[in-house]
Image (cartoon, rainbow, N blue to C red):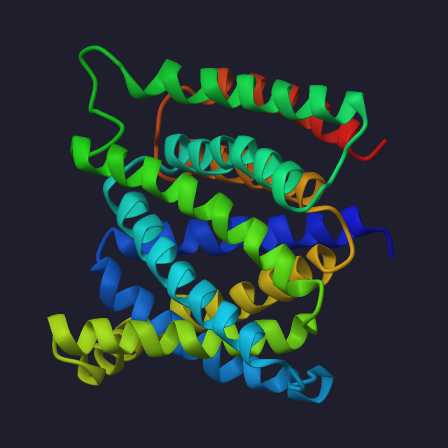
Length: 288
Protein backbone atom coordinates (compact mmCIF):
# COMPACT_ATOMS: atom_id res chain seq x y z
CA UNK A 1 0.00 0.00 0.00
CA UNK A 2 1.31 3.46 -0.94
CA UNK A 3 2.36 5.52 2.07
CA UNK A 4 0.04 8.42 1.24
CA UNK A 5 -3.04 6.16 1.45
CA UNK A 6 -2.12 5.21 5.01
CA UNK A 7 -1.33 8.78 5.94
CA UNK A 8 -4.65 9.90 4.45
CA UNK A 9 -6.39 7.40 6.73
CA UNK A 10 -4.33 8.66 9.67
CA UNK A 11 -5.35 12.25 8.92
CA UNK A 12 -9.06 11.43 8.70
CA UNK A 13 -8.96 9.53 11.99
CA UNK A 14 -7.02 12.34 13.68
CA UNK A 15 -9.48 14.92 12.38
CA UNK A 16 -12.45 12.95 13.72
CA UNK A 17 -10.71 12.54 17.09
CA UNK A 18 -10.03 16.27 17.30
CA UNK A 19 -13.63 17.23 16.52
CA UNK A 20 -14.97 14.87 19.21
CA UNK A 21 -12.35 16.12 21.68
CA UNK A 22 -13.24 19.76 20.96
CA UNK A 23 -16.92 19.06 21.59
CA UNK A 24 -16.14 17.29 24.89
CA UNK A 25 -13.64 19.93 26.02
CA UNK A 26 -16.37 22.56 25.89
CA UNK A 27 -17.69 20.90 29.06
CA UNK A 28 -14.66 19.14 30.56
CA UNK A 29 -11.29 20.27 31.97
CA UNK A 30 -8.38 19.65 29.60
CA UNK A 31 -6.15 17.86 32.14
CA UNK A 32 -8.84 15.48 33.35
CA UNK A 33 -9.92 14.62 29.81
CA UNK A 34 -6.33 14.14 28.61
CA UNK A 35 -5.42 11.92 31.56
CA UNK A 36 -8.49 9.72 31.05
CA UNK A 37 -7.89 9.43 27.31
CA UNK A 38 -4.19 8.58 27.57
CA UNK A 39 -4.94 5.91 30.19
CA UNK A 40 -7.47 4.23 27.90
CA UNK A 41 -5.17 4.52 24.88
CA UNK A 42 -2.32 2.92 26.83
CA UNK A 43 -4.59 0.04 27.88
CA UNK A 44 -5.96 -0.62 24.39
CA UNK A 45 -2.55 -0.30 22.75
CA UNK A 46 -1.58 -3.59 24.40
CA UNK A 47 -3.49 -5.40 21.62
CA UNK A 48 -0.49 -4.67 19.38
CA UNK A 49 1.93 -6.66 21.58
CA UNK A 50 2.02 -9.63 19.13
CA UNK A 51 3.44 -7.27 16.47
CA UNK A 52 5.98 -5.59 18.76
CA UNK A 53 9.66 -6.32 19.36
CA UNK A 54 10.92 -5.14 22.74
CA UNK A 55 14.56 -5.90 22.02
CA UNK A 56 15.68 -2.28 22.33
CA UNK A 57 18.76 -0.60 23.78
CA UNK A 58 18.89 1.49 26.95
CA UNK A 59 19.49 4.63 24.87
CA UNK A 60 16.44 3.93 22.72
CA UNK A 61 14.37 3.51 25.88
CA UNK A 62 15.64 6.86 27.19
CA UNK A 63 14.64 8.51 23.90
CA UNK A 64 11.18 6.90 24.08
CA UNK A 65 10.64 8.10 27.66
CA UNK A 66 11.73 11.63 26.74
CA UNK A 67 9.47 11.65 23.66
CA UNK A 68 6.59 10.37 25.79
CA UNK A 69 7.04 13.25 28.25
CA UNK A 70 7.18 15.69 25.35
CA UNK A 71 4.12 14.07 23.77
CA UNK A 72 2.16 14.29 27.02
CA UNK A 73 2.99 17.97 27.41
CA UNK A 74 2.16 18.91 23.80
CA UNK A 75 -1.08 16.92 23.97
CA UNK A 76 -2.11 18.83 27.09
CA UNK A 77 -1.21 22.11 25.39
CA UNK A 78 -3.33 21.24 22.37
CA UNK A 79 -6.27 20.23 24.59
CA UNK A 80 -6.13 23.56 26.43
CA UNK A 81 -5.87 25.54 23.21
CA UNK A 82 -8.76 23.68 21.58
CA UNK A 83 -10.81 24.21 24.73
CA UNK A 84 -10.20 27.97 24.75
CA UNK A 85 -9.92 28.70 21.02
CA UNK A 86 -11.58 28.17 17.66
CA UNK A 87 -10.90 24.81 16.06
CA UNK A 88 -10.79 26.25 12.53
CA UNK A 89 -8.09 28.73 13.57
CA UNK A 90 -5.97 26.65 15.95
CA UNK A 91 -5.70 23.53 13.77
CA UNK A 92 -4.24 25.34 10.72
CA UNK A 93 -1.63 27.00 12.92
CA UNK A 94 -0.82 23.68 14.59
CA UNK A 95 -0.44 22.02 11.22
CA UNK A 96 1.37 24.58 9.08
CA UNK A 97 3.85 26.28 11.39
CA UNK A 98 5.55 23.05 12.54
CA UNK A 99 6.11 22.17 8.85
CA UNK A 100 8.88 24.73 8.59
CA UNK A 101 10.64 23.38 11.65
CA UNK A 102 10.17 19.76 10.55
CA UNK A 103 11.67 20.40 7.12
CA UNK A 104 14.58 22.38 8.59
CA UNK A 105 15.29 19.86 11.36
CA UNK A 106 15.03 16.88 9.01
CA UNK A 107 17.41 18.64 6.62
CA UNK A 108 19.93 19.41 9.36
CA UNK A 109 19.79 16.22 11.43
CA UNK A 110 18.42 13.49 9.16
CA UNK A 111 19.99 14.59 5.84
CA UNK A 112 16.60 14.31 4.12
CA UNK A 113 16.21 15.93 0.71
CA UNK A 114 13.07 16.57 -1.33
CA UNK A 115 12.43 17.52 -4.94
CA UNK A 116 12.13 21.23 -5.74
CA UNK A 117 8.41 20.92 -6.50
CA UNK A 118 7.86 19.35 -3.08
CA UNK A 119 9.61 22.22 -1.29
CA UNK A 120 7.47 24.63 -3.34
CA UNK A 121 4.33 22.76 -2.28
CA UNK A 122 5.32 22.98 1.40
CA UNK A 123 5.91 26.73 1.09
CA UNK A 124 2.54 27.09 -0.67
CA UNK A 125 0.74 25.25 2.12
CA UNK A 126 2.40 27.37 4.78
CA UNK A 127 1.44 30.59 2.97
CA UNK A 128 -2.17 29.43 2.51
CA UNK A 129 -2.43 28.49 6.18
CA UNK A 130 -0.86 31.81 7.18
CA UNK A 131 -3.71 33.68 5.49
CA UNK A 132 -6.19 31.20 6.91
CA UNK A 133 -4.97 31.99 10.41
CA UNK A 134 -4.15 35.69 10.40
CA UNK A 135 -7.17 36.71 8.33
CA UNK A 136 -9.47 35.27 10.98
CA UNK A 137 -7.64 35.66 14.28
CA UNK A 138 -7.69 39.50 14.26
CA UNK A 139 -11.33 40.38 13.68
CA UNK A 140 -13.12 43.59 14.55
CA UNK A 141 -16.37 43.61 16.48
CA UNK A 142 -16.33 39.83 16.77
CA UNK A 143 -15.42 37.35 19.43
CA UNK A 144 -11.63 36.76 19.52
CA UNK A 145 -10.36 33.45 18.17
CA UNK A 146 -8.86 32.67 21.61
CA UNK A 147 -10.03 33.41 25.15
CA UNK A 148 -6.71 35.07 26.03
CA UNK A 149 -3.27 35.97 24.72
CA UNK A 150 -1.66 33.23 26.79
CA UNK A 151 -3.25 30.60 24.53
CA UNK A 152 -1.55 32.16 21.53
CA UNK A 153 1.79 31.84 23.35
CA UNK A 154 0.90 28.25 24.18
CA UNK A 155 0.35 27.69 20.48
CA UNK A 156 3.84 28.97 19.63
CA UNK A 157 5.36 26.66 22.24
CA UNK A 158 3.34 23.79 20.83
CA UNK A 159 4.46 24.22 17.22
CA UNK A 160 8.17 24.24 18.13
CA UNK A 161 7.94 21.27 20.49
CA UNK A 162 5.73 19.40 18.04
CA UNK A 163 8.35 19.74 15.30
CA UNK A 164 11.11 18.60 17.65
CA UNK A 165 9.05 15.58 18.68
CA UNK A 166 8.24 14.64 15.09
CA UNK A 167 11.85 14.68 13.92
CA UNK A 168 13.05 12.88 17.06
CA UNK A 169 10.36 10.22 16.57
CA UNK A 170 11.55 9.65 13.00
CA UNK A 171 15.10 9.20 14.32
CA UNK A 172 13.98 6.64 16.94
CA UNK A 173 11.74 4.77 14.50
CA UNK A 174 14.71 4.07 12.25
CA UNK A 175 15.81 1.48 14.82
CA UNK A 176 12.65 0.65 16.79
CA UNK A 177 9.64 -1.38 15.72
CA UNK A 178 6.71 1.05 15.20
CA UNK A 179 4.32 -1.09 17.28
CA UNK A 180 6.88 -1.18 20.11
CA UNK A 181 7.16 2.59 19.86
CA UNK A 182 3.37 2.95 19.91
CA UNK A 183 2.90 0.78 23.00
CA UNK A 184 5.74 2.25 25.05
CA UNK A 185 4.99 5.90 24.26
CA UNK A 186 1.33 5.43 25.12
CA UNK A 187 2.20 3.74 28.43
CA UNK A 188 4.72 6.39 29.46
CA UNK A 189 2.38 9.22 28.41
CA UNK A 190 -0.33 7.78 30.65
CA UNK A 191 2.17 7.52 33.52
CA UNK A 192 3.16 11.18 33.13
CA UNK A 193 -0.49 12.26 33.10
CA UNK A 194 -1.15 10.10 36.16
CA UNK A 195 1.65 11.89 38.01
CA UNK A 196 0.36 15.33 37.01
CA UNK A 197 -3.25 14.65 37.91
CA UNK A 198 -2.19 13.12 41.25
CA UNK A 199 -0.06 16.14 42.17
CA UNK A 200 -2.47 18.85 41.01
CA UNK A 201 -5.88 17.20 41.40
CA UNK A 202 -7.48 14.13 42.99
CA UNK A 203 -5.56 11.47 41.15
CA UNK A 204 -7.21 8.38 39.70
CA UNK A 205 -10.65 9.42 40.97
CA UNK A 206 -10.55 12.26 38.39
CA UNK A 207 -9.93 9.73 35.63
CA UNK A 208 -12.71 7.44 36.84
CA UNK A 209 -15.09 10.41 37.00
CA UNK A 210 -14.24 11.45 33.42
CA UNK A 211 -14.67 7.89 32.08
CA UNK A 212 -18.07 7.54 33.75
CA UNK A 213 -19.28 10.94 32.58
CA UNK A 214 -17.91 10.90 29.03
CA UNK A 215 -17.59 7.19 28.29
CA UNK A 216 -18.85 7.38 24.68
CA UNK A 217 -16.57 10.22 23.44
CA UNK A 218 -13.62 8.84 25.43
CA UNK A 219 -13.90 5.31 24.07
CA UNK A 220 -14.52 6.66 20.56
CA UNK A 221 -11.44 8.83 20.78
CA UNK A 222 -9.41 5.94 22.18
CA UNK A 223 -10.05 3.88 19.06
CA UNK A 224 -9.52 6.87 16.76
CA UNK A 225 -6.28 7.80 18.54
CA UNK A 226 -4.91 4.28 18.28
CA UNK A 227 -5.89 4.20 14.62
CA UNK A 228 -4.23 7.45 13.61
CA UNK A 229 -1.11 6.82 15.69
CA UNK A 230 -0.38 3.31 14.46
CA UNK A 231 -0.88 4.25 10.79
CA UNK A 232 1.27 7.34 11.30
CA UNK A 233 4.13 5.47 13.00
CA UNK A 234 4.11 2.74 10.36
CA UNK A 235 4.42 5.33 7.60
CA UNK A 236 6.96 7.42 9.51
CA UNK A 237 9.20 4.36 9.84
CA UNK A 238 9.55 4.02 6.05
CA UNK A 239 8.91 7.46 4.49
CA UNK A 240 10.69 10.85 4.88
CA UNK A 241 9.27 12.86 7.76
CA UNK A 242 9.56 16.09 5.75
CA UNK A 243 7.18 14.55 3.21
CA UNK A 244 4.81 12.66 5.52
CA UNK A 245 4.14 15.44 8.02
CA UNK A 246 3.00 18.19 5.61
CA UNK A 247 0.71 15.82 3.71
CA UNK A 248 -0.84 14.58 6.95
CA UNK A 249 -1.30 18.09 8.30
CA UNK A 250 -3.03 19.55 5.27
CA UNK A 251 -5.73 16.86 5.26
CA UNK A 252 -6.20 17.39 8.98
CA UNK A 253 -6.62 21.15 8.42
CA UNK A 254 -9.32 20.68 5.80
CA UNK A 255 -11.34 18.34 8.01
CA UNK A 256 -11.13 20.52 11.12
CA UNK A 257 -11.84 23.77 9.27
CA UNK A 258 -15.04 22.38 7.76
CA UNK A 259 -16.23 20.90 11.05
CA UNK A 260 -15.15 23.96 13.03
CA UNK A 261 -17.26 26.24 10.86
CA UNK A 262 -20.25 23.95 10.36
CA UNK A 263 -20.52 22.20 13.73
CA UNK A 264 -19.15 24.82 16.14
CA UNK A 265 -20.53 27.82 14.19
CA UNK A 266 -17.13 29.46 13.64
CA UNK A 267 -17.21 32.14 10.94
CA UNK A 268 -15.37 32.50 7.63
CA UNK A 269 -16.34 29.13 6.13
CA UNK A 270 -16.07 30.03 2.45
CA UNK A 271 -12.80 31.90 2.80
CA UNK A 272 -11.33 29.04 4.80
CA UNK A 273 -12.62 26.46 2.32
CA UNK A 274 -11.11 28.37 -0.61
CA UNK A 275 -7.73 28.37 1.08
CA UNK A 276 -8.19 24.69 1.89
CA UNK A 277 -8.68 23.93 -1.83
CA UNK A 278 -5.34 25.60 -2.51
CA UNK A 279 -3.80 23.43 0.18
CA UNK A 280 -5.25 20.28 -1.44
CA UNK A 281 -3.48 21.19 -4.67
CA UNK A 282 -0.14 21.58 -2.91
CA UNK A 283 -0.76 18.34 -1.01
CA UNK A 284 -1.16 16.60 -4.37
CA UNK A 285 2.24 17.96 -5.46
CA UNK A 286 3.78 16.24 -2.45
CA UNK A 287 2.87 12.83 -3.86
CA UNK A 288 4.46 13.42 -7.29
